Image (cartoon, rainbow, N blue to C red; front, side, top):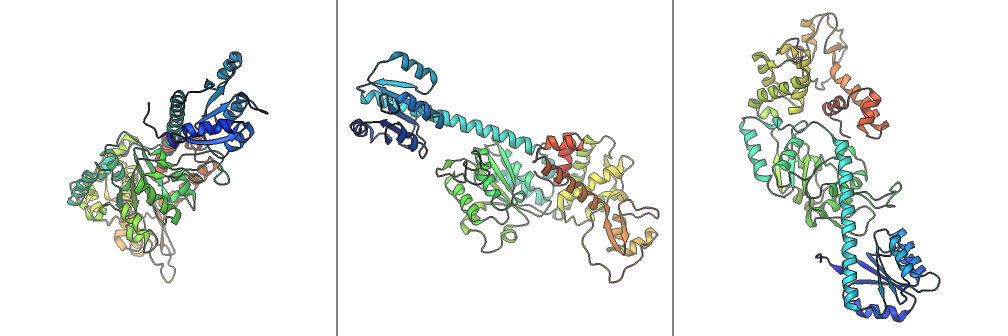
Length: 506
């Protein structure tokens, strides 16, 4: 017999005589959690409020006999196990009832308490198995759908390779924390490898074969994030037509990665603290709790102090989430890794585009190592991808490296656009360095143009336009990437690549 808490499951006893209910109460009140109803209609009203694992019903009752009642009860509570008590061995009727599925066991009166105890325990065990199988099927279905929505290139741990002391320290930190189940807080600037580190922690843990569920917290507004994380019960709010498991349930026995969890609501803070402390969640609108075994990895940009400020987040929640903090070094703090990273990205895009450049000149490497990299590794990847396209040969030269424009104060008086590269170098904020980053031509600028003394970054504008169009297409297709690809007339792999490059999560 399964190791179950029998009293944690409800048993409904239905009879039209109080004496029979009293006899049942006397025999089983210490062993099971019992509920009683006088007659079939009263029992149907009661099961709207409780979820019985087993219903034990008398056969002969006025108004509605036991078989008819159990058929109606089965329609409302399909998982419930029906047991019929009868003093009349009407075999044909009983066989029909058993074949219909509404009655799973029948017992002739007078019943024996030891025999009925075994039958009730077997019925509760069957009910628990059905519910657990349904939970696992729902988890699998939701996780399969999650994987379809989140499909992307395999994680590339080449993004955290290098020989600098800062990166070696990071690798040692990951190796130290990965085998545990403690929460991890990843802090780093925009564009740093936070997701790569989160996946590395998951892969290095005993949970590697279990789900890794990423939640892009910035994609949800208001109560939507709380619902997405914890799921909901049918009827919990307008539009909740069915029960739905949350991301914590999908990540059961695995890892959940909360990407940039900024400004959590008080309600969400309380729920997160509960799951961290007790390993229990409660769906929105539910009254019962669900145990989950989930490792929580959270990332914040650039740090906990700046992202959450003071007095906005529960001290206990901060303490629990930051049990094992991991601080990502900025790319400018490990310039010795820039060349290795750049060559890694070159190999990556060479696999996708056989005509792309495959090597860096010494001058190009020197220019990369001299740049400040405010956008960290993500900016380096974008610069290398662009350079691989612009280069007409196998070698990337300094003129192929174009860095993103940074906001600067506009000049007090408008100036005419210069007609030569030399005058452009004097007009662009940053002088010759900026002109080298965005080489101008006398006919038509290839990367950007100068209007009224201010630089307009054409690449950024084109990226913004593409980003808006993709977001609009995702909204039209309710996030279905396959449908988006069809509507835009592109391959799904191309769509996934563009979404990742533009930093769009859906």
